[in-house]
Image 1 (cartoon, protein in one colour):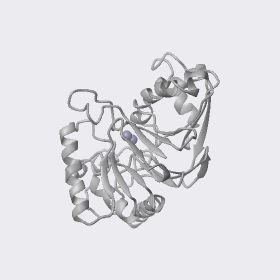
Image 2 (cartoon, helix red, strand yellow):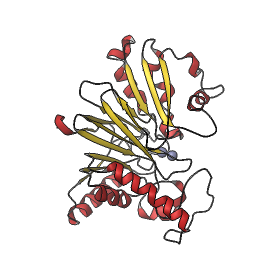
Image 3 (cartoon, helix red, strand yellow):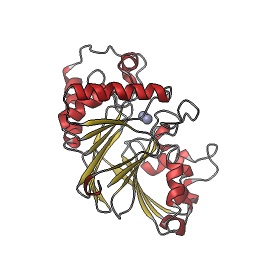
Image 4 (cartoon, protein in one colour):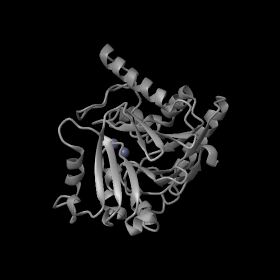
Length: 311
Ligand SMILES: [Zn+2]
Ligand SMILES: [Zn+2]
C-alpha cells in the first residue's frame, strides 16, 4: 500500500515562496492499495492535481471507480471537489463517504457547495455516477479489497477519523481534532476560549475520554498515523476551542496506540517552510530522546510513503 500526499495545509490554501516546499494546497491524501482502486481521503484543493493524474488512466476513458472519504465538510476538506476532473467524465463511478448529519442528507451538503452564486456547474450536471454514503462512527465497511473503520473526533460540528487496512498494512487519518482534555466540541460555536487545564464536569470528561479511547483503539498498531498538528503548544493555549491539536498530543496517541510512524499534518496556513522544518526537528528529537519506537515525519505535497508488503 502506498500513501501519497496531495494537500497538507489546514484552513485555506497558501501558495507562495514561503510555503512552496511543504505545499500550499489544503487536505487531500491518496491511499493506493496494490492493483486496486484509489481511496482518497478529503477533497481540499490538493485533489485537483490528483484528479488530473487519474484522468491519465481509466478515469480519462470513463472506466474508473474511486472512493472518497470525507473527514468533515469544512472548506479546507471539500474545496477542491468541484475541480475533480473524474466527475466530468461519463462512465466513472465515484463513491463519497462522510458522517451522517441529523439535519440534512449528505448529498444536499455537497449539492449546496456548487449552487448559484457559488459555482457555475451544479452537482446534478456532473457526468460521472456519484453515490453518497452516510456513516456513523464505528461503522466498518469495505472499499475494493480494503477494510475501512471510522470514529469521531473532537472538532466543531464533528470530524471523522478513518483507518484503512489492506495488503497487510494500515494507515489512520485523524484530522481535524482538538485534544480530548479541555473542551468538548460538538454542535455549537464557542466564542471565548475555555481555560486550558481547567476543571471539566464529569459527563464532559467521560465523553472526551471515551472518544479518545476509541481513537487510540482504532490507531492500535497502525503502520502510519496522519494527525492534525496545526498548533504549537502556545497557539493551542490561545485557541483550544478551534479544534486542532499539537505534535505533543499526536505523540501521546501514537505512543499509546503503538503506531510505527507518525506524520505531522494539516499545517497552519501561517507556518513557513523553515518554521515547519524546525518543528519537525524538535519533535523528531523529542521522540528519539524519549526512546519511542516510532518515527516522526511531516507531510509535504508529493510525499509518498510505502507501507506493508510493498515496502
Ligand atoms: Zn481542516
Ligand atoms: Zn475543520
